[in-house]
Image (cartoon, rainbow, N blue to C red; front, side, top):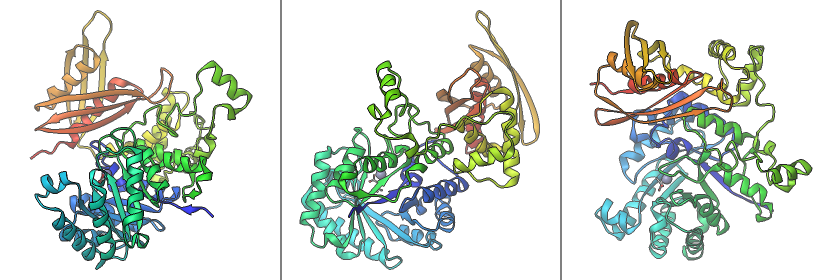
Length: 499
Ligand code: KIV
Ligand code: ZN
């Protein structure tokens, strides 16, 4: 019989920590419900003490989700645990995830403490959390760089104190797969009472080894893995859920099963990428645009003769369907609603009508409307309540002439206009914008990406603007890339914290 591996998804906590990836509560609920459909066992919904937004999201996700355990992160601090317990009060199955750094670097520089005191604090936190919930997970932060003998003492102590799951994070993404596997093996063999808890992996991808390390952990006895959709997370990210799930599906001989419905992988990946405005790299395993695209003549020839020559995964198994480009100007509301449903987005009638209206406008400009376009449209009302909106934009540009832009803004119902010339159409448009919004702000990063192919395609623009010593992230999507750029800049400005 196969062993069961528990999937702990931290897209909404470690993933959401990534600058620019923040979601509002409604979007987090949408992702959480999709994770439930995907079949994850645990959803880490946030770090409640970190902000009122996180606290509220944990409450609302707890109400919205039925089967998965809802988990809230804390430091090994009583106040954090009190707040997490309060945020989890509506969860049908709840877990508190508490912990402390255990590497010498953390003990010395972060806590100015010593090994014995850290064990005492860890034990106290677990005991305190157990007063609120039966399911307590302990994380030994920077376990990857913690020596195995000391780590075993920590793990033994927290299990005795009542931890039901013990997380061994490779916080800095430092370990080699052989080292990480050895670490888990060492714990399995040296910790008294290890079978009273589940050992969990939590690997970061700083050296590109997160998935390999996680697999090494699983092969040596870990029975929970902490993962994110598309591998997003702090710095270079976390182990990606889709890679882990498909490794175990492709290598059935390992004898480890998960509860993941792999056909929901692709729609979930698209949803997370679209809501977080975080593009997936084209060559990303499993969910990248090129993951199943055979380009060399030899490969194409082989695949045409028999797909098994070069394909180890059937794209349908991860939910990629060949009919994804089906909507045109002649498609009705029902077709749009159905496509959105397949993508995991369920809208009420009013919202659907609005998205349909935008869909028809886009279909006038663009022949085929693909899934990414639809997801962008479905997320477009994020800008609806914005104070500053683009009213109109006109740009003339060309080779050998200066670009000139005239632009109109609607600021809380009042109309403003400006005109500017610049070194290219985007420069001219942004200079005009800055004439109206006269603040000390600097464009720090600017990326333009076409969604699929074709000169009529939607362009997505991601921007970072510095204002008052802070970086703001903005997003715009439009078939006109100059308009998308201005929208992205305005999106940043709308987020400025103005005192
Ligand atoms: O990487 C890490 O150590 C973490 C812990 C908070 C679990 O994210
Ligand atoms: Zn982490």
